[in-house]
Every structure is written in structure tokens, then in C-alpha cells.
Length: 312
Ligand code: PXP
Image (cartoon, rainbow, N blue to C red; front, side, top):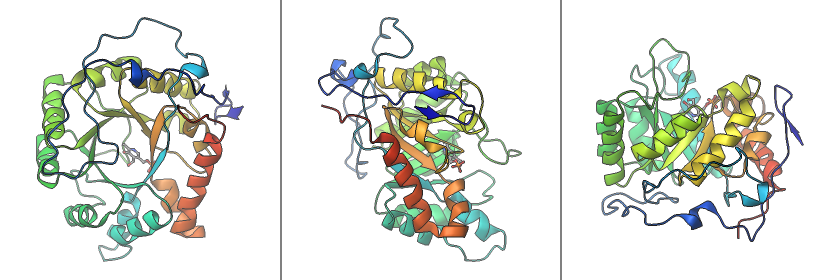
């Protein structure tokens, strides 16, 4: 039994190897986007087909019926390496060099957020990361046409669309997927057509999950900020949203505010296949070094998933 920051208890789910996985129940899917010009992401797959919602059932199905992501990826967000560099507007520390160290230490991917105000990561960083990341590069950006145009020019393996407000210290809430849905759907279609895997950063909320599926995203990244801050019920909300997203054919990512100390219960959610973690890894690097900081989070993730049965 894990304890969350708010004291909630969640049993570590186990999966029955013989259980039919949600993706096995899917029927006709959309044709894959053209991948002629972009290298496919390791997990590239077509956006989910528009299927009717599944019949109502208990919010959390028996663990045996849930899909277990085979390998949970750790993507390290290097924004805060750039934050430190921008404090002096110099060359160090270099997020590109830091990204390589993270990859050497076992990161499965690198994430960077090019904010509209360019407060940390700069355009040149994005170009350099895109050219040098050996694993997978996840470009985080606001859902503006200018940012999407940049992504379509670079064609990174993955783009995560996030809400952005200039006055915020960090990304504060999930994307409002009900605001201007036609624009979001058009942006996602353009990314999908370009062979870019698309993810929407959303609150762990059933309506937002369904809307993300309807808009055509490949994945949702569930906002773990409330969980990290100990909000009551936050882990249960993540659990239910992860399960629903997988049933609807979406890949499930999660992130924000996660640390080596609190990541366990989120890492143990069966369907979560990718975690994006930045601030705590870069912060702890001050004490233990970047490679060790990455390894500590990886070890916490692996320990949390050790009890999950491998998918059939
Ligand atoms: N995921 C998203 C969408 C984010 O915006 C951020 C913060 O940049 C993170 C994950 C990483 O959050 P943290 O830096 O708190 O680990």
C-alpha cells in the first residue's frame, strides 16, 4: 500500500497476464500519419479512432482488467538548467550537455518547454536539442499557431501542448480543451499529419480525457501538481483518468511536481507509460550530481512498478 502526500492509500495494482487489454478491444483505427519526413517516435502510433465511449462501469476496474504499460519512460525536463544559465545570460549550465548526461544516466527522453516569453529555454536550445538528443525529444509548447508552426518546421518526435500564462511561475493548470476546440483539433491534425506524436497536458478529469480523444491527440499528460501538493483525492483522480484514457485508446503520460520521494504512487498506476520530471531532478543535482539524481528517480519508478505483472 502506498501513501500519498495527503495520506491517501492506494493498493499497488497487479495485472492478470491473460487479461484482454483495452487496445485489443479497439476496432478500426485511423490510418497512420505520413512518416516520410520525420523519424518515428519509438512509441509512434496513429491517433485513436473515434469510438463510442465504453459502457459505464465502476470508476476503477479490477486490477486484473487494466492495461499495464510495458516500460514506463522517464523524460527529463531540462528547463531549469536553462533557468540557471539565464540567471547570468551566459553559456553555463548548458541544457544540451545536461540532456546528454541525463540520457547517459538512463533517461528515456528529454523534454524542454519553449515558453513564449523565452524566460529559460531559447530557440537555439530547441534546435540544438532536436539535433543532439539520442533518445526522444518532447517539445512542450503553448497551443498557439506560431508555436505549432515552429513544431511543424522542426518535426520533433513528440509535442506536448500546454496552457501558458506569462505571469505564472510554472505551468499551473491543465489545458482547457473545451476552449476553441476547432483550433486545437486543427493543430493536432497538422502535428499528426507531420508524423509528430501529440500529447495534451490536462487535469485528470473524465471530460478532459474524453475531449482529448475527440480532438485527435495521441496521448494525454495528466497534471500531477495537485497530487504533489497533497490535495485530497488527487491520486484517485489520476488513477481514474489514467484508466479511462487507456480504455479510450490514448497513451497516458503524467508529470508536474514529481520527485524521487513522491513519484511511487503515480509510477505504480498501470497505464502510465511516461513521466515528465524536471525541477526536482535538476534541484537534487546540486547535491548529488545530475546522473545520480536521474538514477534516484528511475530507481523509485522501478521500485513502484516492480509488483505490476508484465502485460501478456
Ligand atoms: N509536464 C509539464 C506539461 C510541465 O509543464 C512541466 C513543467 O515544465 C513538467 C511536466 C515538469 O514539472 P516539474 O518541473 O515540476 O517536474
